Length: 259
Image (tube, rainbow, N blue to C red; front, side, top):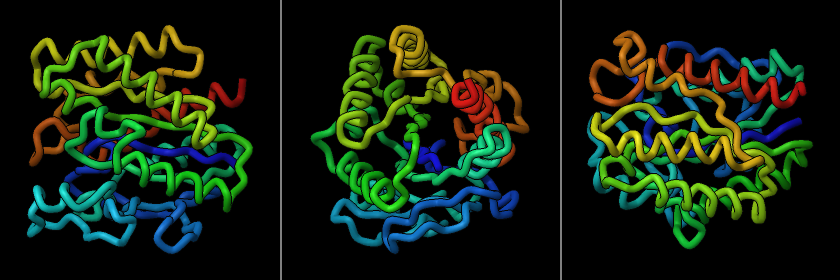
């Protein structure tokens, strides 16, 4: 059995327009930290966990997002809609024949600096992942990352973002035992040069570091295909887009695992 940790900002948390399906994924589970259980993996995914490691609140149409972001370290898929994790794990299990436990730990509107080891978000990520690993005793541990839009907004440089990727992976290896950092390359968000600072940093990390792998770079293509984008929230993928991202990314990780 393998553990795959899914982290990043809103497109990894899940901000789609609908719940497209909620069928259970064969041979796949989601680790629920709040109850310390392995639940059948299906949409919607995730947990709302506060910085104090208590149960938080779901995001609904009436949520004060500023207050929610201030209180919560990680969040479940917004509005209970579709996320890429079930599509990813369905593809991964079918192609590898392996069972998998998904650990969803993502939060919208976060920069990569928010995920550094001295911060509250990382503490919740580490706690959830480590408790899952103690329970499951997996053979392999992978980390899947979809993030970077906020760093383009704040005009971070390629060097800055790449440095922080290296820091993050180093602590994930030390604290959690992650063997491979799987990148879902970020799409366009600001539509200025800072998108490409982050994109280039992700490309270089995957080409230069042996413990990084580019799972898919399809996000920038999907940006130009309306059916794959959330029609109500700019810069975010639709349910169909999330399923496509999960499918394409999982194929690459399965190739790595299958050798």
